[in-house]
Image (tube, rainbow, N blue to C red; front, side, top):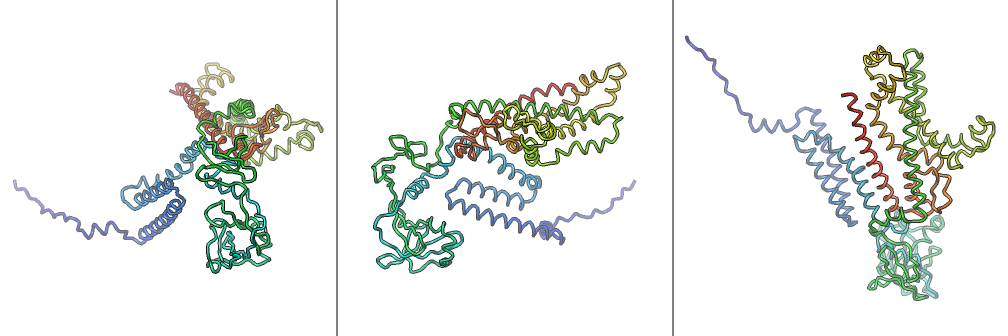
Length: 529
């Protein structure tokens, strides 16, 4: 036997030139996409570099380093081959970090500070502001001839000293010798000064970096006088002294200068306060009892909202899922209309309908009765639940309709053949099977209603107010509306630290309730197994 073999063609190793050619886009479309990617990355680097430079100039080292790391990581991900999953995950991860993780950690940080209306800056900013607000005109002070200049939104002052020298300064830059206004500054005419009179009157130009040296102010835009503060700051002793009475204000360690009688200077500055905000929530006489009532009502509102919307949604889903009902599509479309309207608009509309004097309910349904739907505490709570029922049942109707249509027909037919009635089938088969599907959605609905800001604030603003506190807290307030009022002013000024502490409290409550609820729903999974 003779074996014949065909000659093999030797495989040629790819040349170095062909390898390099594979790394470069060849088709026109690929090249265009490559160039677009390079342009976008260049724009990203430019914006990121500017942000890093700006943050470094503001002494924000940690945020600047974080931005730099993100920019470098994005360059590596989108320029290096073999990282295809990272290219899709990177944008989502960045948004997750910025809008979720960072917000949670920053809120936690603020909760342990006194950040608020009178404590929203650094100590140096507070010192300068105290000196500036306590300034009065020096009697028999020299008169300075001035001209007012503008650059963008900033005002500057060109000053002719009595000794003949000329200086220029702004509110942020002390006076410095200058023969004329710097380039880019435009002199204001008399008409322009009159048009910006409030800004001109508020312009204070310091003589030097020492805030105790005084400032120049003008009332007419042409002449200025010396103003000095009635409070002198001693940097060595870290105290303020009132020049007319000699009263001394010292740093009390809580972000405020305070004298021996307890009087304090405003503004203060931001400092860590530990757990004081959390302790204040349960020790402040003006806040403790109303807060406990708000917590109880928040739980009741969330539970009753879920129970009522689920019950009504399930009832309507069963009714319009019956095979003998005609026109199901039309009815279903009508029933989900409340779900399509914005909740805040619906709250305003219902507030008008429940008005005791000219609302639709009192004038039409109750023949002109004066029922205080929104001013009586219990009626206001009932009204909030009613409006939330109207807004929330379409969602449960849709969920329950889908769950009912997914139930196995053979199980229902077997129960019918065994002689089970409609109520027994619903209680023993339909409802348990439904809960397997909708239980996670009910938990999510509870968490949503626990923080249902729109319906409460737009309908009642949390009122009627409690009579045993001076704070703006009412019978229909939820924890989330209380957080809003504390953060943005509700009778006691803005207190972001306390509001953040409440936000952490809400987060912990919702987390605990969710964990417990999900553990309890595991028992329902055995029904399907």
